[in-house]
Image 1 (cartoon, rainbow, N blue to C red):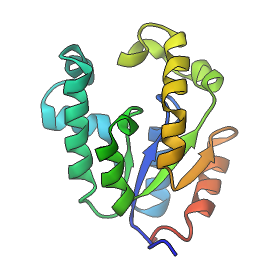
Image 2: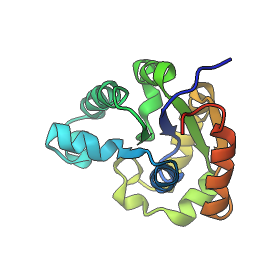
Image 3: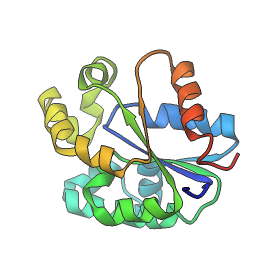
Length: 171
């Protein structure tokens, strides 16, 4: 049997609901919440677009540092950047100490909801979202301990997440 953990790393596509669901879940479980992109901006003293302007690899190095830092915290829900699965070391850091929750949401639903121009990797248009989906979907599935579809009312999705996590986390 898997051990019970008090850390949740939320992974998934940009715009799938990681931050929205993560904040609500943290409130319900009385966990701390951390948006990884905000944390990266704090520790790097640069914005995410500034880091991407220096090259995606520069951003990914900061992202890996954030993974190592955040996994040390207790009773935390981490909303990861969409590309966190691109480096095995990030997932390895989470696999050991966190329940990895994949928020599975269709590209069509994301496009309806998300302002793609505010996302560095999506600024080229919605076709990029399909490319990212094709590249990462199996990575998300492989990394996840728990997979939840994000369709329907947010409260219902939170209820489903709590049900799926009940034997995996410490409340």
